[in-house]
Structure formats: structure tokens, C-alpha cells
Length: 377
Image 1: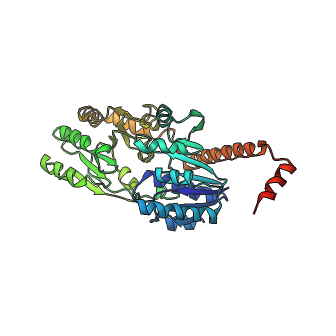
Image 2: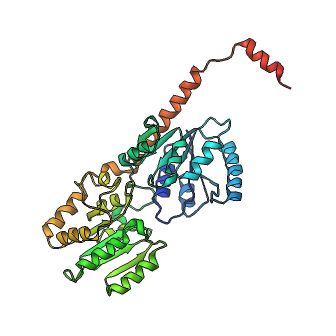
């Protein structure tokens, strides 16, 4: 197959959508497919080149002139690369690939990562729509995407070509007990509730520390809130870290307090590292935690419920140990090899259906063909 992935950029900034696209491109190229990525570029171009993945520059920034130029550039890329499959991972890419298909015979696949965004319904322009969890698939059906278009390929990033193996990671020494999150520092990730929950338990557990690994537009606002709590010596803003597993390996509890979360890839990494997991009961998170078998769930936007669960774990070493053990079970299904194989199956199914449709299309008789040839100038 000749596979073209479209993504906004390939920067190494902890964007899960970008990471999934890069993983797929590398593994597909490793299997012998001709693979390219069209994006605005970024740090991962070196890794892509190592795996033989071509990179085409495609700036999809949403300004009228830029989009016009992107359309012209996209046509050039398709003409040069001649893809049999175009896989769009973000909204702008699927719109370009759908409306500028022209006479190209490629099959169009999209992956819905953030179905809670209003624009996610546009991912339905593709011939096949991959949902990263069953919760995402159900949401897209409710929003009008035909069920026959949808395929569920659960996310996973363990064994990623982007990452060191866990055995090669050097743990960063933390104060204990250590509570950690790895997330964008903005409201949707529940950073405010996590800080508030820690504030509620801080007096009862004076040795506990909270590590916020990540960056984002709301960081300065949350830093101001922490200053007001008087806990700035115990709540640590660590910024973006290219190897967050180094924090997870020395953490006792990992928290993901998101208000919305299609899957929660970071939870698979925290599970592999052996953290006890606490996360919000939203969207695809229960699936990522084996429906409560691998972690504890709390309602979103509820700092008191989160504080109660943290108190239970920190005051009961046996429970803490139990949930650390539970987290590490049943991890094979989160391997990138499985994600890639299931994605390739979606491609093949779609290509076969297009081939069958083309084969069954009635061909014009010789006299009809001759008639149209005669009309050509």
C-alpha cells in the first residue's frame, strides 16, 4: 500500500494524536509499505526518515490564504506520491482530502481522537472512520455518523518507536508519597480539581508531594493558585518532559482528572510503570482501565471525591500495593503493533470494497465508447 498520513505537525510536544500518527507511519514503513506524512513539520521528521517515511511540508493553519495554499500544495503531494490510502488524523486534513480528491482513486480513512469537539463530526467525511474507543464510536453514532462507516481500533502506545523501553528509563527520584499527573496544563485536564484535592489532603499527609508534568496555556494561572495555597514547596510544576515515564517509575499514585478524554493514552504508560491509577469516569477512560479492574474511577469535576480516593490509598498501604499490581495486568492489548495491524485491516477492508465496487461497475459497450471518443476535440 501507499499510505499518506495527514497531521497538523510532527512536533514532540506530548500531543497524543501526533504520537499515534507517527507510530503508525513508522510501523507501516517497517512492514514494507510506502508511507508518507504531510504536515507542517517538527522534531519527529528525523525519526520518520530513519524508518523510511517521506515527509511533505503541508501548512494547514486555519487562515483563508493559508488554506488556499494548503489545497494547492495537497494536490501536488497527491500527484507526486499517488497514495492508495489517505489517513487523516485531524479535521482540516480530512476536509482537504475529501473535497480535493478529484480523480484520485485513494481510499480515505479518518481517526476520531477528540469526539467532544464540535468539528469532530467532519471526520465522517471519510470512507471509514476509526474510533479510538467504543465510547467514541457510540458518541459519533449519536452525532449522525453511519455505524457502517465506523471501526473501533482501541488506542495503544506501548512499544512505540518514539520511546525508550521502560527498562532503559532512569527513574527521577521523587519525594514520597508521590502523586503525579502527566497532562496538558489546562482546565479540561482537571488540573484545578487535582490541585484542590491535594490541598484537602495536605494536612493529613504532610510528606505527600504532587508533581504536575506537562505544559499549557493555563500554567501561570494554576501556579498563582498554588502560591495562594501555601503549598508551592510540595506542588511541583515540572513542565513538558519528553520521557514522562521517568517520573511515573518513582510515583506512587498517578491521577488523570480530565473532564473529557476519548481514551487516555497516558494511562497505559502509567499502568506499565506500575502506578496505582485514579482517573475520572468519563468517555473512554473506563475502557483504558479495563472497566475498573486496573484503576479507581471518580466523577469528573469533583475534587472532594478525588481527595477521598487519595486519602484511602495513602492511608492503606495494602490497598495502594493492590492497585499498583492491578495496573500492570493485561497490558498486551496496548501495544502499538496490535494498533497498527488493526489499522491495516481497516485499510485492506476498504480497498477491497472499493475494488469490488469498481469491478462490478458496468463497462460501456464498444459502440458507446467509440461514440464518446468521436466527440473528443
